[in-house]
Length: 162
Image (cartoon, rainbow, N blue to C red):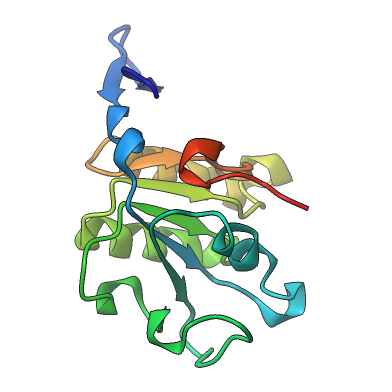
């Protein structure tokens, strides 16, 4: 168990914005946003077997996923009746900002962005999108990524498996 974790976000001044992430010791619910049949729902199934909390699939058009509870599939994170502590985002880059805003509205504490095509793409558009992500990180939502593997915390069942 972590006693505390600090996340430092970039700032134009010399003062770093430091945020406490110790709440990850108590993640009880997780949403995978953008699970894809094309990828055989890999990101969802990867966590389904071992995550010890409530796991949700978020997709605007998917209504059924093989071997996944239908009652845990929602078209938007805002539709989930309870709280969501952690969101794993796999949607295309152009949709990420909207999803982060919905997560903030829902009260999600931490998001991990697997999606790529931000500054890693070497384009002006990607760089601007990443700047917008950084602005959102200054608010209530802690952000890992973009183009990252996410949170690895085997004690809670949040880990990559083959």
